Length: 110
Length: 114
Image: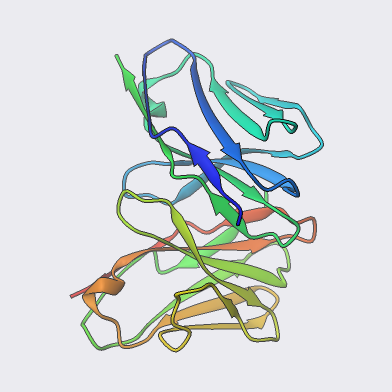
């Protein structure tokens, strides 16, 4: 079945760039998403990319998609302490249901 | 982006009672909605696909008689946790699908069964 994998933990210093990586197995993925979840809160959609795109930039966020390698990354420029959260990568095929990765906990040190 | 509203955001109920959670697409029609469950410090697990006007499709291992899903209109799906027990305590999140297959999530419902 479909699978989405992420590293579990990333620690960076405030002001540095963060890169969170994700790999997936479903070659029919339509959309790939990045969500942020703060403690006790719901999911906040950060950005998403359509599968025929290679890159999408939105302010401090840059999403890169390597469809051949089924690799997705999220780069956060100038990481702030408020960016500390769990980041989920998810992919959806043509049914629309999302398969989530395990989540990457981003810790930002002052 | 499109807006999905989930209600209530938090609910505490007694063991043995039933709880209904609503998921509404506010500015678009959604023939398909999804219900997810998130265990503490875990990822989201798809529970079921809710289709307007037809029966929900449940994922393997999810009890359909315990988690009743109704999708009576193009903007509303409900999840009823019947005869709730403490092990049903969890974070439940819905998502609604646009015609372009973009998924938008509600803010989630934290259910605590005491």
